[in-house]
Length: 258
Image (cartoon, rainbow, N blue to C red; front, side, top):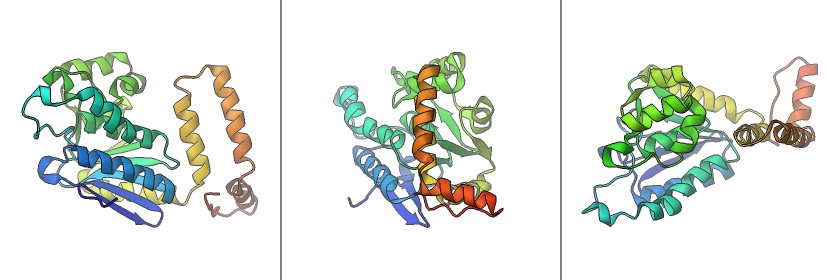
């Protein structure tokens, strides 16, 4: 695919995907949604970590409604099923960790795409806005599923009903994101974490993602069983052999991701 609305870069096993419509606060068009889903799948196949961010002064303002003449022009169910679900599934099913660098406002579906990533780091000027109720809608793009699980029902309900911005610092204190940092420190912080993950045990990271996400819907017994199966597979990996050898030799492991 030739990208028009995003930028894609693969360097040192890190795939960086940048939403690139800065004049529109990276509002999500149909073109951008198709490109993003494709790029996320591509990154999962060829990188060892994915970084998702936005160009300009914001991460993503949500769905771009500029082309609609009226609300009747938008088939929201079709758009969600055919255009947003592939993005969310590409993140959830990725073989590698997905980091989101939130460099400014993240609203609507843009907020929920960001929050669906594994590690979310935001600049202090950033905020998260479940803006849907302002136009008579419910949070979508997975928001009604993961918000109650991440911050509890009371806070999730407040975010959805009041539709007020949540600052990056409050998002971090609530446990909604991993970290809030000074704006100027965001690129370096994300680059350091991405570089660390790109040199780590990639198969183990993939298993961690699967097991952690599955735990939200499993019973305790089901989760113990899944842990045993995944650990058994990893115990036969090259990275586990290297990790044990490095421990015995008192050196840093050189993981290959195999």
